[in-house]
Length: 240
Image 1 (cartoon, rainbow, N blue to C red):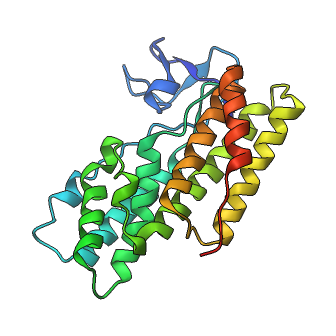
Image 2 (cartoon, rainbow, N blue to C red):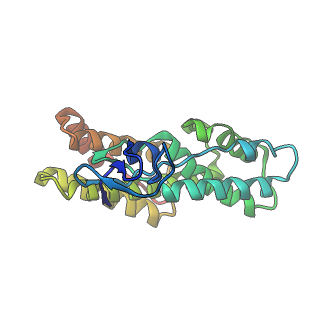
Image 3 (cartoon, one colour):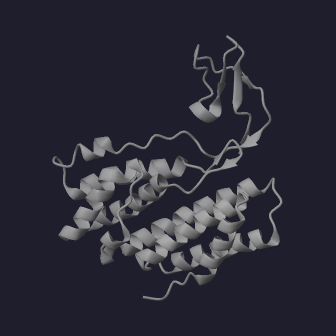
């Protein structure tokens, strides 16, 4: 949505940036009466806190399924409210969002599983430990039983990110090649989702790398755009 992010309080005259606070309330007097003093710009990147500390603190107190449900709820709320266009600027698809999305999918599995093997539980706990710090387990640590969760999580993340790219691009003239690359990215996402995310973890990571290269390319980095095209062309997701 397009908003006037620079606000001025009509009660006390204080000026502040909604882009920074995420609130229409005046930081000085608390009044909700304000006016925008700048041009409207696209802004989907809401200020959202993501803190898994309360869930981690319950590790020794509750069973894994209950812990997973709590983590899932926090991740769902965070992912649902996140965006990638900040005051008209396209942000990157960041690791915190990816980790939260993966934890959301893994926690959903853990919450439903009657028995978890040690590797699955350790992987879930690793995500729970580091996701809100923007850290993801390496590709080689992904258990075979959870690779579909990572694949589907990343495909869904790219799908949401691509929607924001299209929103951001509405006020810009993309070249035919850029639009073609964006369409190809969407086709890859559809393919992974059709496979229910059951792809090699390395392939899922390559999808993220291609997306990030494309982002930089759309911002004007020609070398990154060429790399994105090459990666998108070479990406393959086979049946398993």
